Image (tube, rainbow, N blue to C red; front, side, top):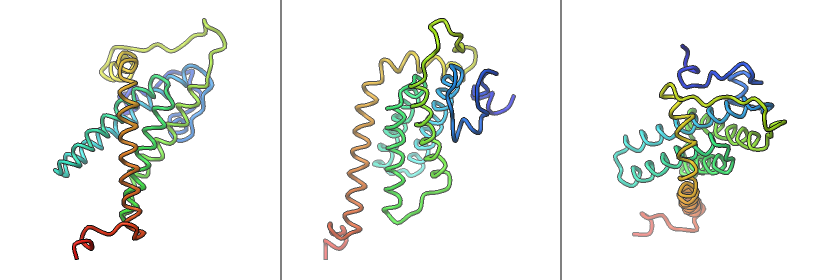
Length: 206
């Protein structure tokens, strides 16, 4: 069993695209595409959530830890939203991550290769979520893929979002909006410092 099957992304034969195209330039032509892209978006967000949490834990800084946990929660809930066809959830997740990249660059650091790839994946994820939300079946009785409940991957990607998203979507949008606003405020503060409109902390003491 390969990695795609382990994550539950092997899909069914009715999908339009191969896995590589579906990651970087997806298209939606049928219900299998919608289902596959929803699962794919969930796993992308989940992997980034785990990465954000691990980075926060490694730093040992309490402030970074709190922000890292908040970001990980946003990405996890956002992934559930993507799985359930919410492109606004995908948009918020991408915006938060992209502002984080801008913050890194504003501090004079270039984002790592993996961070750039993750940003590209989240942008593609947003496009996929929007296309999936716009797709409509030809008829109400049209054949659709089944959501399974056999493996751990099925329980996480197929069952959990369907049950949790209707309850957690409002808290998600509230938390995500706050995280985005705080991220934008932090970015604005750093930019104002770099342009000399706000004195640096060390310089202000002299």
